[in-house]
Length: 466
Ligand code: F0G
Image 1 (cartoon, rainbow, N blue to C red):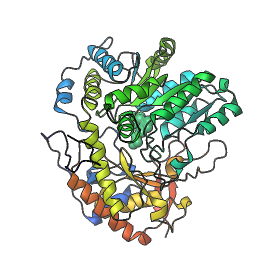
Image 2: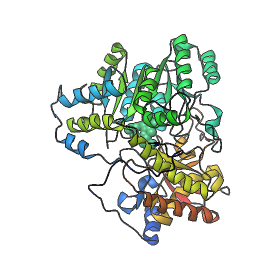
Image 3: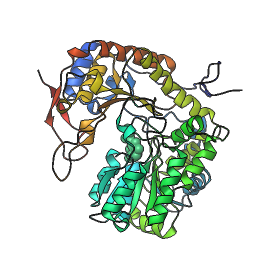
């Protein structure tokens, strides 16, 4: 059977049925107008109860399977040497292929520890586009993040199939400028979140890894959405059509010295993460910080049951290709509906969500007045659909100059939780987006009423500019 939704003439459907449901609230427009005002026009500050369809993030919002819920009951809550830790270690070794596991409470815990053990003040850390928490920890350790993603990634309309690729010339230029000894590692993100959920190719990762080895620089993956990247490689890169995503994921990880993972995404759980490494000495250094910041080396911030459900989630996500085909199939379903209605979105459609091009939709609002923030608020008021700003507010300020980073991408992210919503929910979302885009000229720009110093997008408050 041809399971590829793009070439098959048959419909695909989710490889699961629903055993338990959770009611969600439908609210009135008046209620939502009050709620967004109370939330300072920041969708992070809305109460979840006031949200109808929650597309804020795919992080920790996954539905677990019956086998994962059953695994929770088997968690071993021993402080030291928990059986559940060893189950998790086995799963990471089997699926990702890294020998050394350093468990953390979530992805940023792993980023913190990796940054602290490898980065010295004055170092450069190249990366294929920044991620908010990743760059924060690199800068906090005294490093300077340098963007080495290909130019296509900054162009929402470019349909290049691997917009997550590292630009090797840009990477070489960083090596020339800083010298390899001041570049502890390159941080390579799979299925680049801020670029719109865009993959890198196996060939590009392999070439980047070779360049790293020539210069004695580590390659550290952010493998948070590596499974989604593996699916796109299977669809788009010659030679991978007949491989399983399990095999492709393993090969991706083979071109790296370690990885940070937020398990709240691909791994199908609600909390958890890890740092995985090959070098036992590096792992030893990581563990000695782990015990100070996260927890003992055999739980690192997760309970035994969390680790048990995570081990099961890791195995389940690659058991067959059907899970990832349906997961990305649903994202593409929503994206294609919006394309059919001429809504400007980031192309190609990403792995974990559909990204609206707020700069194109709200062309009358200058970037200093936060068009993506304003669009996310307007969408919520229209239908109770919650999305997230991924533009100038998320990008923050340059720590040296204090000026706003002005990213080329000014986006609103409609992020799809895994195994949670139905196709009918996606229809409602698409209709609301179309409605808001049609009346875009009614949306006003915003200004800060409170701007936090660190990771400002989470807690910032705004008001409309009348
Ligand atoms: N790396 C990537 C690529 C991420 O998308 C995230 C989180 C992290 C690291 C940090 O992991 O949240 O477990 O500490 N992304 C979420 C999102 C918050 O909504 O995109 P964490």
